[in-house]
Image (tube, rainbow, N blue to C red):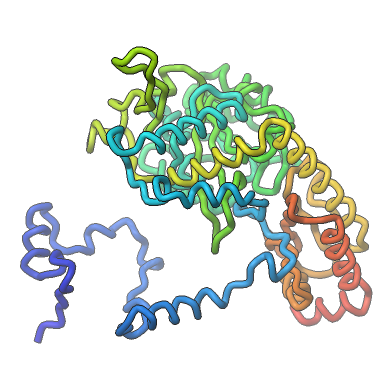
Length: 464
């Protein structure tokens, strides 16, 4: 007896329909479409889903029960970062993006969506000013995707395959980039030194087969690269593209990478007015100079200002639309879909509200608060900083007599999330403008209590 199931609302689940589709694409089974997924990552069982829920109120109750397991940063003192950050979101940001013309807009075309095009044009313009770049795309899915696309652009432009990574990169981001470009390019890690790029090691690896030098600043541990100009000069000397991954939150006070020779700047805009929301509202940006070689490699949509047939009137529409997969379909350089345009509007509202003075004040506050936290934690016996670099928002500390996992477990009992374990004895700590001096002092005091001889001995035995 057949166990095949035909879903009443999904006609493609009918066996005859599936068979016809497989014949058309010359595949013997659906499994062939997942051949690239390693067996160790396959589930090999049915999904763990609840029994069918008979009514909407039952579904709502079920989902509320799941969400109730979450503990927000309003309930605990959080020093978690590693890609998703607890920055303040002004109320006006949420108010604007909840407007129906933004919240319900899909792709949108000129006859239905003038306001959305205009809002995204303003976002692009504000981001360009912040980053000292001429052209910024409509957001991609997230910062990981933006970095992967930036490196793919470098590969297409140079026709080369090697990528030299010279900074610490979040493991998840590195995995995404490697997976995205692996068909044509490969990423090689050049070891860092003291949290920053090792220029001598980079120079030894550079050659005419290098497509891109990949720099992250701040790095995965929050270190700010201080030799970007030298890195860029060395890369450009062999014809390589300099691709910088970054977070825009500090560029009210820091010099943007574009001013130090970066060709492509990518990153995530979650810090700019987007909530953490169970893992983060994420969207990526790609910024380039006003150079057709780079602009025409951007797969994402660009909105520009244009005049109309009516004197004195202007509108907002696509720039170089012919380079996108919307126009080229399967011949496009990369596929581009709905992406994260709503978050671009949110970031645009945030930047307009903050202005240059507000972004400068925020950048100064983040630098000062990060340094205060470093000093406060380094003053605790048995704790030292991971490196001597200048850091923005994040930094690592190392424990002499215990493990990062033990520290996390102990402080959670006190309502503190002290950071992310990035090694047996290493903790990644994050502070933002939402972290007060008193919060940092509380973390330092809790760590000091743990480092007392009796406490440290107990922790060590517990996790031996």
